[in-house]
Length: 144
Image 1 (spheres, rainbow, N blue to C red):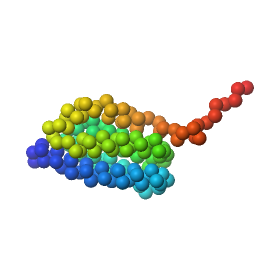
Image 2 (cartoon, rainbow, N blue to C red; image 1 turned 180 degrees about the vertical axis):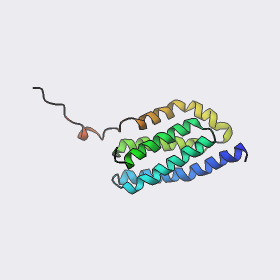
Image 3 (spheres, helix red, strand yellow; image 1 turned 45 degrees about the horizontal axis):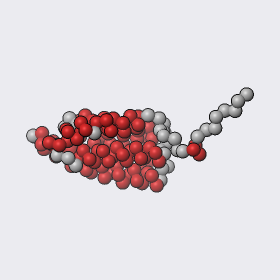
Image 4 (cartoon, one colour; image 1 turned 180 degrees about the horizontal axis):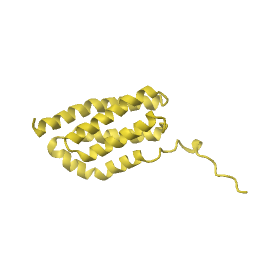
């Protein structure tokens, strides 16, 4: 198999998995307590990670891995999904879609020019989940 056909396989797989991610994240946005949505999302991120690794797209591997880890934490109950986290996952999905839409000749320059943005999204996904907003903020302790 030539490198080109492996890259085309990556693109084809990514397109299908990106559809799962987009649809699932939008559903999760409407139904944040529906645990059945999370596993297919985690598997889609895992699949993209593996396909990107095969074709040597390291920044895409890092982003998909961060998305997968975030979704695993939700699946295990270690993290509750909040709108800001869904926004981060959608931003990651958008970056993955941009990469998957490129051809083999343009993906490397794109990866280089978007490396900082991808690293930022991956770091945000690996950090503590964003707060829900002012309603979920705890009041500071009273002075004694």
